[in-house]
Image (cartoon, rainbow, N blue to C red; front, top):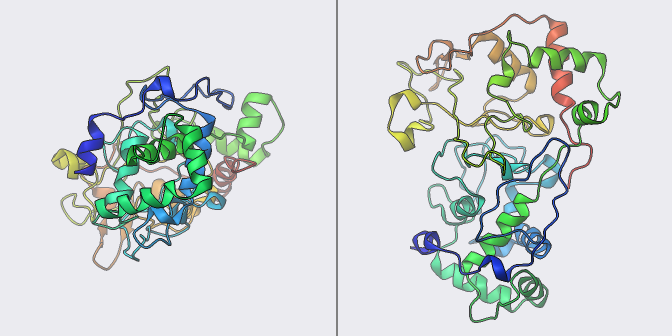
Length: 358
């Protein structure tokens, strides 16, 4: 009911928000798309940052967005799969929210959630699994707590000048959170400084790894494309880009079956089984473990799987030969790598770490 009510329209108009937000974008990064009904403002970003770390947004009052999206881990949590406010384990890995403003879709395998505003409602109200674990009664309690918190209420009035205690709604919280996450655009890695400022920031090994990464033989950039190294991106220059998902041969339980159906859960198409969004590789050295289910511990293991053209699991419930998955992307066909080349690729991936994180 909450989602349906919010899906119709936000109450705040563009005219009432603070205008002329100034992006501090890295070189080569266009402006992210911003919904007309939630224009950016510094005040909304400040409020959103405070709410992002506020445990009152959870059913237990002890869990926040930042519990899973830790700034010190590039807004991931270091766990194979996320753990919600009630201790329930999620089946998927926590993705970084850095540069999420450019995502063509949100979540690992959801082609239908295409704005940060819509995405924030999912962890708030999910019941299977529970993430923040809110319901309508708890939202009423949350709003009452926020308007009686003088610091937060001042920030609310700054972000939404026409707001009073009687009209505060969940949409204001969601808009502020989305504005904060939308502001998290970073690219100040050794790779960026080498590329855009002609600084000698890459080692010889990293330069070799960069050439391998963008080569036709390895074809890493087919999935991890664009300035965000993430595949299709939406921006003010490319507002209509469609999301793309990939089956990379991580599993085959027989006949192409995956433990997690991926995009097929939304499309109903068998050929979409096990297809997931390619995450950005920016700050990838900080976001272990890897893959949609956190089942790969290190970047060295990731490279070994792609070099083999998929993963073979010898025993257990997930046993099978992912290399034979009929829905695997054809470009994931394997390649030869010497030890020196593997080390060079790892050096390049480490060179994608941003020098200063928020």
